[in-house]
Image 1: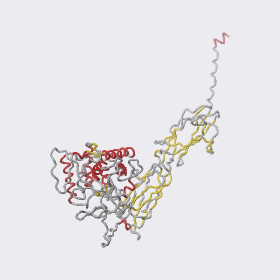
Image 2: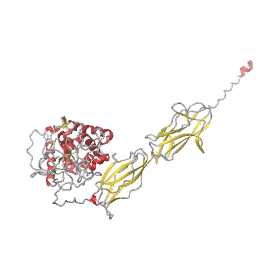
Image 3: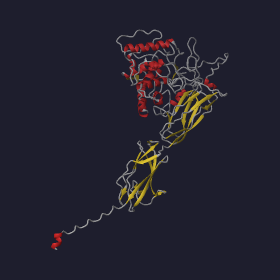
Image 4: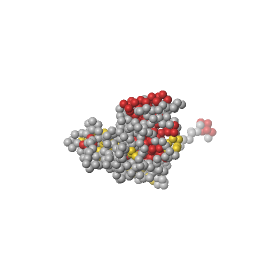
Length: 575
């Protein structure tokens, strides 16, 4: 089996003491302590009261797997005293170096997020801080040229024995364990989270949690969901806690974030140091063993040597097999709708309704603490808030999981949101959602200038109209403009005013018009043939808004010649 992370998770007084030492050390040194502002730099002390993460997998991306607790060096001219038991080791200045391929992966992931989710403001140093805490920068940069770890990095099996209990969700595809899940790769994703959060960061067509480019990009998207802005202190804390829901984890990541922000440099792959202290043991992390492929049976441990903690021990025919303890997920028989209203929204708008799903036993009793995954399927660009097409929510004490709000895209029509139980095969529950086209209920001209033209001429003013819906600006609404025969006959006229197409040909119906962000449409220039008269232009929009505009084609009014002046009396006498 692959190299494993640690023994059993130790909680309680020792962990609290470690957190206290961290905060005290940062405060005493004044660097790399975290300052309090809204640029993502938050104090470790403030983190104690930060809000819990919401709407994510229970246990976060890693299933709350163990992590490295070593801290960056303090800015002090005096050497640090030797640590005592329970005190985290402070790393040396060499820790500022990050292996070249790993550093490149972090920066490329942050660049991609800057384009796709600019409002998230994800710093690459945050990915580096999490990568340091999760895997020691892929075990000191032990990666191939394409970014794949030379040996798989696996956390301990999450069997509830000192860890979270997460039974197998991937048939061992990622972690080689078909009984329990294990966190996988340099960013330590559990398989059930990687199934929806995985990304292809190196464009090789594969989403591999063992590849640092794929894992870094997935971590970036994971941290940027729910429209979090990581330049805001509260959102930064929420995002980190959603990755691993531990206050000490938050403090440790924040300290590394500040350290890397003060400066770092590239070092050759494979030359980075691996941290020695982990949250699951006070002793140094054991050296990684040479991994076998997931299909190869595990080797029994040698006498006096602990067996690989991530691999189930070989079975003994004389010992009755142990049955894994039953989890809440094991008791779920089916999913029921929790009272979801009809899901409709106009294109580009938010769905006012949220999907509510109940997990129930065969007897109809609701089940709490069950992970329900909601997936947007079908031909649509609708997503959950934050731009993700998948969200995993844990059922509350009433057995209900409420999905994040849906956001409609520009594609209209029906699509499906599918609810499934993570870690158990039960019939999925589908919800139909509909995106309708944008509408307007009122159209009005933006000018009251009369529209007139001489036969064979062109109208001096272009027609401009504004669309609104319930008194609000109606942007991106489809519209049609037609020169009609009369108020009672909306068929296209065959004489009178007209538009011109790109080739200069006569056109009397314009389709494919769309209001701009301010609800405005400015029609092309109008021309007139030689037929004088009064004509009508009708503009209609999706939603039923209609406006009829009057156009007049007439020759200029003839002016009478001025009368000749009467002859004066003297002129008459002379004549």
